[in-house]
Length: 428
View 1 (cartoon, helix red, strand yellow):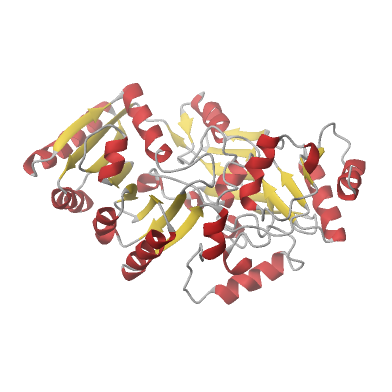
View 2 (cartoon, rainbow, N blue to C red):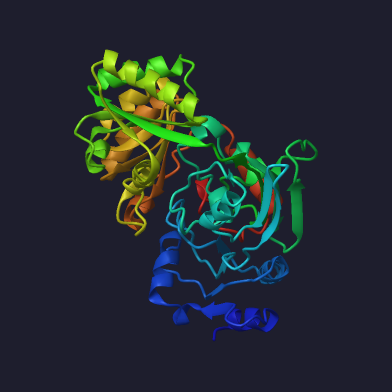
């Protein structure tokens, strides 16, 4: 056992909490490797079982100036920049308890290592749910979802993570435990660290506990898919944006994505409605009428067919085997979403926010699509890609004027720069 592993093992007495890198199973190494420069491997991975153990690990790392890569289950370690010279990987996967489910207040507090699937199972027992649909839902932990700001098509109705997180507890770089927010929906006290930590990729601290607002499960659900010529789909999207329809999900789909789903060869528009049965029927019929007037093909999905369709949609974009494909998050003005859809092979864009996911084949496609997005007041960020692509590209593509503010915040929270060095933009 190397020096770092031995030191951590001497202070964390839980069995199998510290595993030397050379003793780590190959599959676990491959899960972690996409976030780390392949020329430098960490000494070990540490699995604290409690928040107190996590704080002790960080305090020791801070004292010794060991660089730390935080993670949950590792499902999104292929996202973001490549960290260099990591000494210790710290996983919150075993810090995974339910703290409180306030059913009447519509809030839930869980430790950051709890899997998204588990939290949905707990909530479903009380006919409630967390209104997020992240990538890899069976594997993703709550901490990882918040750290990567990973939401999905449900943002059409419920917004993103920053709109749903009410409180957060985290361990600072120096090992001190800090809290922000609370466990009630109406909480306005203090600096909004919840929003700051959302999407920070573990560069400011390690999230240990999160409180979310939750929502009641609706009694009825139906999905309608329209397919047809791109200009007709664009007209339908414009009509829907200005209508009284209230879908919980609404996405434009590229023709290849529609084809990969086995639903035809033309551009698609997919909407999901949830409410009481009468409302769902009425809104679905209105959408079908819009499609009929625009000469669009239509299909209706319910029950397990609907569930499977929405599961397949992100699966066709994301690469769970990590770095063999280029997956990007994009954002454009909603009115330019169809222009983007026409320029890509595989991807989808939310019709109201203009955010989307695309899968690209090479660096030239990334740069061309980034130019298109930026021309429409948007952005393109590379999530996962082969190491050689990330080494050549500016994966964040940030051209705003707040970099100095971000660097100042990093210095304030992690002045020794030991947390996730290199994962965020400009090497933060």
